[in-house]
Image (cartoon, rainbow, N blue to C red; front, side, top):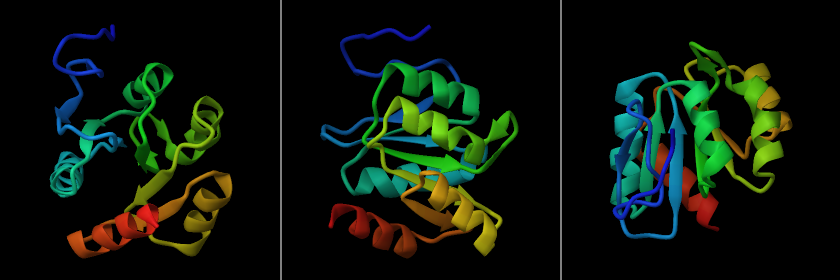
Amino acid sequence: MLHRNKTTAWNRPESVSTEERKTGQHILIIDDEPDICRLLQLSLVRHGYSVKYVHALRDGMQYLQTYKPDLLFLDIHLPDGSGLDALPVIKGIIPTLPIITISAYDNEMEKQKALTTGASFFLAKPFNVKSLDELLGKLKS
């Protein structure tokens, strides 16, 4: 069950990790790889973002039903579902939400499907901090 408390506007189920910053930008990461989530979180917090992550599509969808992040990083291949299949549902919940799909499979067909289904950008794993910084620059411009 999600509820509010005094320290954060987004309370989380036990499976959600968070790092808070005082900023207007809230980012949700849905990825089943803890190392990827932590790398993204550390990089994004360094840029001043408030970051949450979950390791399952089900938990991410629960968050999106209640809270409205400013940006979503969405893994395409999750153990409990396909991020590509979830894209239209997510866009139905928050039509203006920028979504960055992330995948270890960097092929043109998957990239195009993600972009035509509603993703704003596609980020191939493994990625480095420089490519993430470049992507964040594109989002700000």
